[in-house]
Image (cartoon, rainbow, N blue to C red):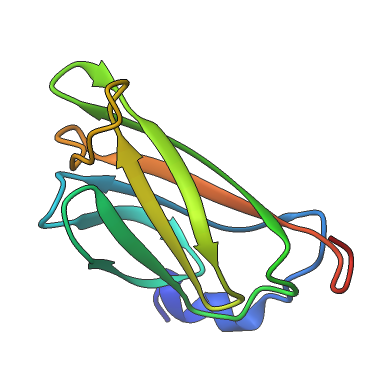
Length: 116
């Protein structure tokens, strides 16, 4: 049984890390390591969607991420979130959308259902 298959054996609970991902490259995303991630989708320059294997307990969750492009740190925003996907946007300090060239790392911690 692969590590990805084991995801279905775990329960996801509020106030815990319910998923994480580490990638290399940008645009042509390669998942280097992950938990509870089915895939990633490139949805445009500086934009990607993380697809969760098991739905998160709530769409009220915190996304924290780190990304770098050509030795410049990027701002990362998880603006569009559902229980099954998280859309991440990568921006330079000049507010320009750009793909991370050094990859990125992200994790989500979910909140309680119905609590905003």
